[in-house]
Length: 103
Image (cartoon, helix red, strand yellow):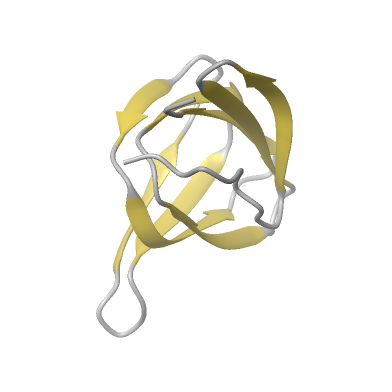
């Protein structure tokens, strides 16, 4: 799954575009949240860790969990629709999201 157009979402900044790859930076201050859909496979790399709350789906049928993230945490992720990420920690949370494209 790839998307021909770059992701446009609140708190996301397209910081690098190369042949077959786009890199976004997600930044959330303490208390901030974002609801977004990632319609592509991606690599997530944490730049600044914090405690985050992740919810998949919409209430009352959502699945929610909290996790403590640290600089350097990485994870390969599948496409996901309707995800909410909230920074419930006391530090700024920053993450790189690398999307691979067809061209």
